[in-house]
Amino acid sequence: MREFVHEAQPMRVVLKPGAAVTATPGEAERLGLRRLLVVSGPRGAHTARTVADALGDSCAGLHTEARMHVPAEVADRAVEAARELGADGCVAVGGGSAIGLGKVIALRTRLPLIAVPSTYSGSEMTPVWGLTEHGAKRTGRDPSVLPRSVVYDPELTLSLPVPLSVTSGLNAVAHAAEALYAPDASPLVALTAEEGARAMTAALPALATAPEDLDARGRALYGAWLCGAALGATTMGLHHKLCHVLGGTFGLPHAETHTVVLPYALAFNAPAAPEAMAALGRALDTDDVPNALRDLARRLGAPRSLAGLGLKEADLPLAATAATAQAYPNPRPLTTEGVLDVLRAAWAGDEPRPAP
Ligand code: NAD
Image (cartoon, helix red, strand yellow):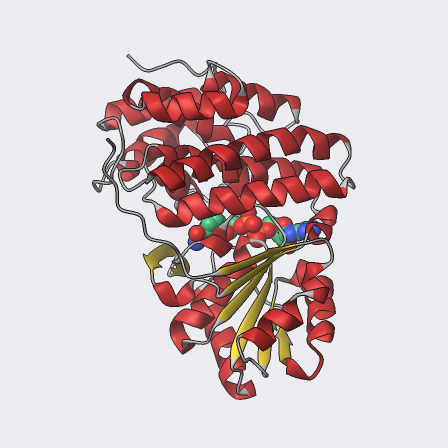
């Protein structure tokens, strides 16, 4: 018998082509919201305007200044805009950056949030917020930032360029992979993560070949939903810690870094996480998960090494020290030397091998 604790997240999810425009107004109405601030990044402004137009009189304003990692000054301006407009809720349209801004607005104002994701980052399914101040990113968990409603519209992702679709999709697979060996995973989370990884890894080759294939886009969003739900329910380990350090301290791009690091973090953890590896093996139809993920990324033209992402070899020891400075759950005990080996292999893009 497996003992567990499982807590369901109180949220509603809609997935349907066209839903950004056709379903968002109804979701706002269900929540009783009549003065919504719509937020997005500058590149997503056009899509956000379409959603704002669909909301009609229920839209109080449009704010298109979201930026990666939610800089404090960006958050301050958005919170001010929400207060000035007398908003009673927020709709975040875009990737993890726009949803991250919506979460900080929710955190500071307690306004309910509706998320309309346009990438596969999974942020919309988690109660985790992030804020960057004086060059350092703080994160925290707070139930108030969990979107009340998530509207998945595959049509929004048609414009997501293939390279970003691939790395964003593998970012989602990383959530599922680490959820599978998280100390707080439950049987339901494990099923969710395995199916999420299966759906996403099957959809990515299809949409890389035919980016306009709405069915493949829908299957990828379905995978992103499940992988994000697994992320939201669990505590992440070495892989997410490494990516947090590489993004936060060395400025490496989020989804690309997840794509490069994942096979190496999994090769390190594999000997201590046989059940997680078996589940991922079923999902990817392989008995060598790290190499299957590396091959998938390579076939789809994704970056293959941290060196290729611009990290200097001389920075590896500092990254290893930062990733082991504080304790966090991981199936295999962590040493600075062990983590440095993982980083060295990911830096060079070598074949991932289980560390001794
Ligand atoms: P992003 O939101 O920064 O988007 C990347 C780029 O893609 C941007 O230039 C954006 O304008 C563009 N883009 C997004 N959707 C598009 C579309 N459909 N068509 C064309 N262009 C599009 O990147 P992301 O990877 O989605 O999110 C990364 C951020 O989210 C990071 O700050 C990360 O820390 C955060 N995140 C947080 C959580 C959490 O649980 N809190 C989870 C995952 C990611």
